[in-house]
Image (cartoon, rainbow, N blue to C red; front, side, top):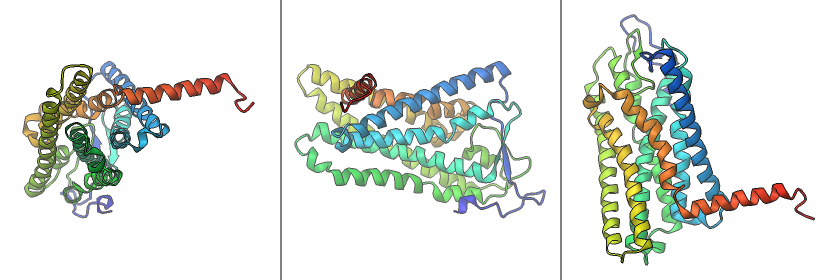
Length: 328
C-alpha cells in the first residue's frame, strides 16, 4: 500500500522523517492528565461494553439478525468499536508521557487512514439507517420489497467499501510530502491539519482537495439524513396521538440529536477548519470519545427488541448456571 511507503522526498536536513512526536495534552499537569486518563479509560470501556452487548444480542436472536434495521445496527456497533479503538487506547498510553509520544511514520498514516475511513463509513451508515427508517415509516406496505435482504446487504457493503476508498488519494498525497525536523504534531492523533503544518513545502491543492472531499461527504450525508427524518416526522405527526406516535417521535428526535452532535463537531473541524484552531483538540475529543458513547444508548439500548434479546440471553445464562447438568 502506498500509505506504508517511506517518504521519498528529503527535508532540509537531507534525511527523511521516519517518526512524529504527538504532543497530545502536554500542557496539562500530572493530576489533570491522570483524571483525563481515568475518564478516557472509563468511556472506552463503557463504549466497548455497550456495542458488544448490541452485537451479541443481534447475533443471538434469530429474529433480529435477519431484519434490515438490526443488520445496520450490528454493523454500526462493530464500526464504533473499531472507530474508538483506532485512537483512544493510544491516547490513554500517551497521557503518561508528559513530553509527547513518538509515533512512526507508517503508524501515523495508518491511524490517519483508518480514523478518516471509519469516520466516513459512519456518515454512510447513518445515512443508510435514516433511509431504512424513512422507508419503514413512510412506506410500510412496500418496505419488505424496497428494503429486501439483498438490497440491505448491498447498502452495508457499499458503506464499508465507499468509506474506506473516499480519502485514499488525498491521504496518499499527504504521505508523499516532505516533512521538516522537528516533526512535532500539536495533537493527540495524526490529523491532516498538524501534518500539513509540519510539511516543508505548502500543498494547497492537496489541502483543498482533502477539505473538499470532507465537506462533500459531511454536508451531503447530513442533508440526506435531515431530509429523511423530516419526512419521517411529517408522517409521524399525521398519526393519531397515542403510544405509537409518542414512541416514534421520541425515537426520531433522539436519533437526530446524536446525528446533530456528531455532524456539528465534524463540521467545525473539517468543513471550516479555521474556526476550530483554538479548540481543535477539544472538538476532536468530543466526536472521537463522546458521540461513540452516546450512540449505543440512543440507537439500540433504548430499543425494546434489543433489550428483550439481552434479557433473554441473561435469563438463559442464569438458568445454565443454576443447572450444571442440563441434559439430565
